[in-house]
Image (cartoon, rainbow, N blue to C red):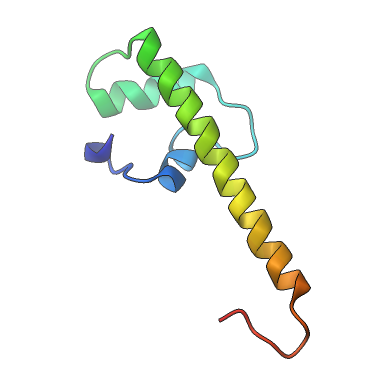
Length: 80
């Protein structure tokens, strides 16, 4: 998958769908067919669907944590 430019979990989270939306098996299979240059096996599809689910969950949790931290900051302080 790194040859297709997907070299981290956050890129994978968007490569196969929109985070927060259910994964569509056909979208995952189309991504894999392009990335692998062959039709994905059932095991490859299942593994990438699980990995994409975990990547999307991690992305959403990271963004939620970032927003909550900024909400907890007293006024006059900046995050950067």
